[in-house]
Image (spheres, rainbow, N blue to C red):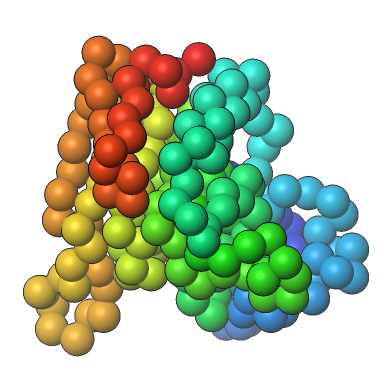
Length: 207
């Protein structure tokens, strides 16, 4: 899904021409805004301190999301569960709100704080393929998520990211990227790293 900036959180770059400062939000501040009703019930995410408003998903997105959720729940490892379009804390100013995340623990473990770790994350890309495969891929890799899937609806394929590794250049950047990228078509099958004995056909994840 594509995202647009909500008026409550202007972009942090470039700086305003008149020299005025712009606000970057932390996750704590973002959660306070939500509790105070300032987000007005919108579905939002927090990326690098900027609050983005997500559009209403279309039926193909919802179908792919449901298909992937059903598969993940069947193969979810013991001691983990699948979160559906809920918060995921990957840094002080990042909550990308993944479509699906396989996280450790149980539902009640996150009654007050969002998870910071996940075995696997899945995003369904309708019009957000670029952001999902760049910005979000970097965030999930930096958070140490071992495996990240992007269900690409436009091209009817599955993009699999694995092996998060620190970027060697430039020194001190502190960013991480996925070393392994796989692009699979409808006739291909894939097994999650967290459940190597299970497999799913890409076609079974597509609407």
